Image (cartoon, rainbow, N blue to C red; front, side, top):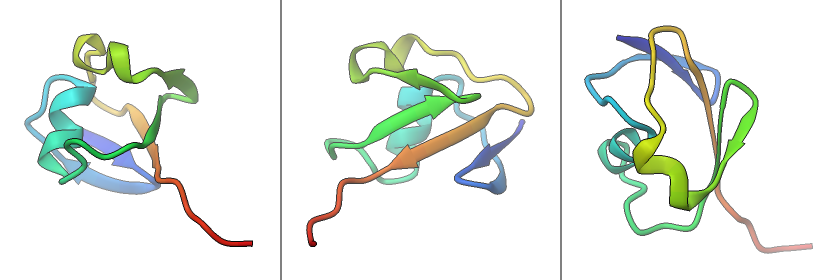
Length: 65
């Protein structure tokens, strides 16, 4: 299926948000996530199903000032 990840269209086989995070190398990292502009907590990522055309945003924390 095709989804948008941080504005970039990708073809993925992942079925859940947790699966796509693992596939993209974010496993174990602290990130904020949203699917179709709705925040998804880390506790709900493995239960959040992805569908064709979904828009996923992944935000990593940054230090600095």
